[in-house]
Length: 356
Image 1: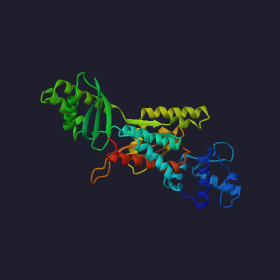
Image 2: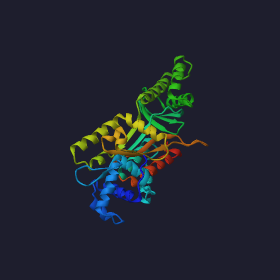
Image 3: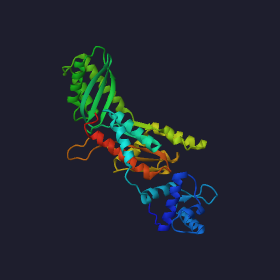
Image 4: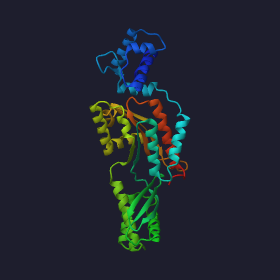
């Protein structure tokens, strides 16, 4: 969007957006005249506001003289007028501490990162890890009980997934080790579908030296991952949904927020958004009516990709995305560096040996 504004119009527009972020209420010419550094009459300000409204950047929610920014206006503000600095040191330390104490589980790390964003932003934190068909690197089974084991799968892009699988009664540690080694040797460098046919053929033709119990463990692992990969979308974690309801006073607004939660559960539209993030660099911002998912809810999404393990000489692979869902009047100058920093912390932890 290209809108040419002179410095006076920019300052008036910036003041209207800043007021909207703070209060959510329309602002009029008399209020603006008291806030502007440059003395301007109310009539001059009203004239500028009328021009901004004609350009599609402002609208009047009521018959009063007060104006609010449109979603198009917020986009213009974010792209052209917003100034963002570095995240405050105390906020960086809080994000570091919460993520680095998450332990060695990727799932726990992502959940804690999302919780940190929700707590610091006072909005909803979101993390998305898409199901991938990246080749496998390693498979391991850890016994949990007499009829279950934890299957640990590491893909070549550095993503680690843990799944509980049912195992036949009587399977011992040696059989689990043998099943893990068998799958690692045959899955390494292949996607799940590429390896499944070869493994089933080998076991069906009795070419493998596995005993029946170990074969059942192998089949259980394949079946579990097959169900996961057949699901549309990926793993979606949302924390702090209740924060979005704090400023809701009208029943129709409440219904719109509920509709957003239902849409997030289906994940279809969100997957398309994340696809856009994966093809871009840095933080992406989706404002209100720009996107079908958020248009009816009056919300925006600030989201950034996070990366997996870096291979020598190559750019690290995008693993997923993390961000904040909040009202369109969120404080973008505060939220953008917060999301960017959290995504970089998650990428750093995924890219070294600190997370399995």
